[in-house]
Length: 339
Image 1 (cartoon, rainbow, N blue to C red):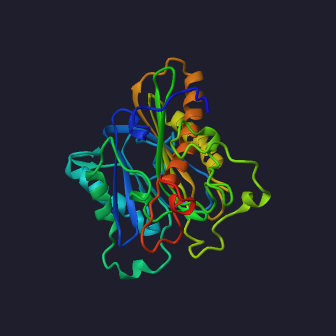
Image 2: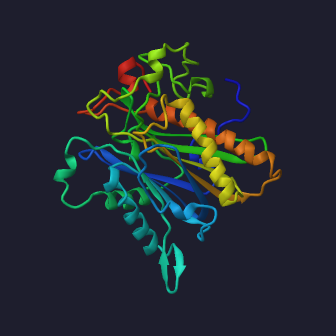
Image 3: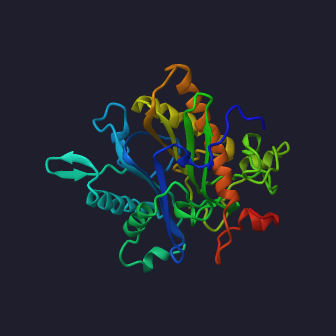
């Protein structure tokens, strides 16, 4: 495609300067955690369109709520158990002196969202909940460069008939404002068209970032309804994402960016936002760049966030790798291609 904007140097959400991402996973658990953080608190918002979300501290992200900045955002596997990953992140941030001042103490603000990657009874063998430790490990690993595919919150993900994964992408607007997306793809619907290797997000691909196969052919009607409802892990769903920018957005403007980004999810996953998914998008704004045009630029940022999220979804599935005992084949194995 001919892109109106170009990706940043890494084509990752960390092309938004100041942001860092860390992953941690447990091969035996077949699950993991991804953390986005920065050296200073940043504005954040959230928008939910799935029918089965699992969240922590999302109410305070509303524009009318007191807290103006958060210290980290957490994406985790593990369903309700995975929400405890934020406990590990909050504890580590507090030990580092981070957090909302409450008298002489500190209370880090760490909103979180979870996807469901369980279903085979592994949690019965845990003993102590493993997710707080995974959260601490992901925070400790936070860097400007991080791996995609079967990593972090994408470790045990399944998207339709294929393995899901962790994806990311970025764009730099003509104004110099950077926009990026980070997503753990565990959708009920599919990222590819029927049994073909082409991605629904193909029209928005830049270069060969997820195979360079181009737009998909006209889909058969059945492709529009292909899901994992009949698969062994039919109840294990939800796609959770973060979109970010270095623009100085208010919480209300950030919330609009999150809402716009859902368009990108719907372009890349068919069907999306089902009653069985907890589809959610966080928005983060570091505030490093003032808006030059307070009307036009928020519109461009929202459109760029949707484009980034579409591409990030495809990249997450494209980079998934084979692991023993997989519930679904990865894209590279099924189509005999190297990701």
